Structure formats: C-alpha cells, structure tokens
Amino acid sequence: MLEGKYLAAIYADPNHRSCPIEQTFRIVGKKWTVLVLRELFFGANRFGRIKTGVGSINPKVLSNRLKDLEDAGMIKRDVTPGRPVQIEYTLTEKGTNILPFLFSAAKYSMGNCPEVVFKDGKSYTAEEILRKMSS
Image 1 (cartoon, one colour):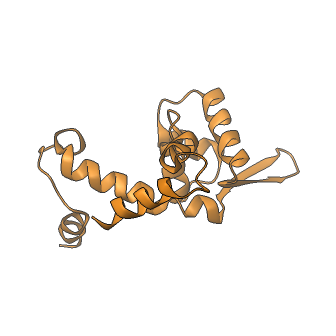
Image 2 (tube, helix red, strand yellow):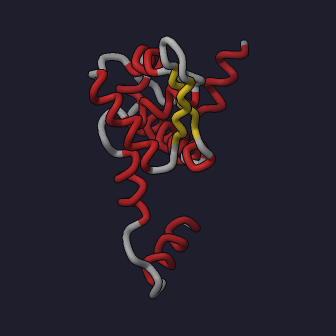
C-alpha cells in the first residue's frame, strides 16, 4: 500500500509538525461543513440555496460554517452592494482541492456502509452508478 509508505515518511520527516490527517478534519470535520462544501461543488452560491441543499441546518450555524470556510481560505465571499445586498460564495482553489478527499470518503462509504448510503443496502462503485444513470 503506497499511501501507507508516504504517510509513514511524513511522520518520520524531522520537519513534521502536526498530523496532516487531523488538520484536514479540523477544517472539514465540524457538523454540516462537508454538506456546505458539497452544495458549493454542486453550484449553490447563495445563502438560501446552500441552506435548502443542506437541509435542516440552523441559519446561524450555516453562517458560522461559511465564515470558517472563508477563514480557512476554502471559499471566497463576494458582496454586491445594492438593495438588497447580494452575497455570493465560491470555492477557491484550496476549496476545490478538497474534492478528491470528499470523493474518497464517498467511495469508502459506498463500499463499506452501503446499508446507510443506498436504499437497497448493496455496495456500488462510482463507475457502476454512472453506468446505471446513463442507461
């Protein structure tokens, strides 16, 4: 397993300061954050659209998650003055770079927790789902 060798090398490096896995989860590990990122990936760029896509998130919590993501450099907040003021959120390069991590997490759950992910409880690969959708 090549990834394991890379990870071991990171921890053995004298320049290593903190756990890179933990750092990723510090950014995206708070409740709702991954769902907010998902909605931004799917094209939602306004507060209301993000809230609708995420579901039962409290507006104050959504505001906090958007602020956390902005502080982490993962999203950009653009304000257009006027009546009413318009605010749009977009992913930065740093935010877009988390997509492979989220896709890996999705693949893990699709293969290892299918009873939670899929109504039929069966395990599927991303390729199988794409084939199923295109037929």
